[in-house]
Image (cartoon, rainbow, N blue to C red):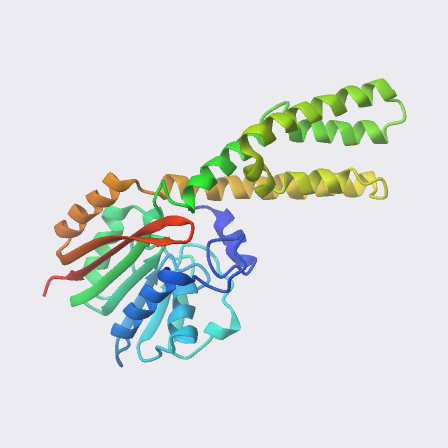
Length: 304
């Protein structure tokens, strides 16, 4: 895991869908989690949320479902920005903590959960730790990314566009050269027009193949902003620097996402890993929304 995730969570996102306008997970995904948290809503219980981010699952359990009996502990490798609604006596967060080595006693925890997070870790190590800390009969419930899902598949396209924008002689490079030429009195109209035509061609090629993905990188917004004549050249340079940084961060996060996502055969393999770690009653079920497949739910119980 890298520092870009700390930067991402520090922006205050509640869930891992930065382009989402929702407060939390919704639809079937939320309904199934609320049903699970109803089952684990036991006084004296301890629920651990692995790769918690800014606590979306805990927020769903406590502030949406009002399931406030157990203690909730969110664990994440990143530095987080926890909202005021989660600053409650029975809620704690362990930040900058590797989930592959957990600071809990053997058989201490009643339930372990994770929403689009556990798959970013070394699962052999993490599942061994989960088995160690769960009480006999303790529950595990995670949702993992699928490569072919409506969440991950579009991000493969966005990642391709990001890589294209970061290449030498990219549309971004052409835009920077055009902005520089427009501010340089020594450049002729012919020089500027040549770069403009180059930029139009490069952008057109990306639009023809990856139109939506290009918009998701905010490149069209950048182009519109830096081409405004009333914005100073120094300000435009600062905007480019900010965009380069965000593009790098976005690319690293999407690379992590696409690498972590599992295909159907890899999800089935996880069932074998759970069996090897003393789990029983293992079920795998896909979860969908109006867009289609969004992930796979894996649920199991530690052998009594």
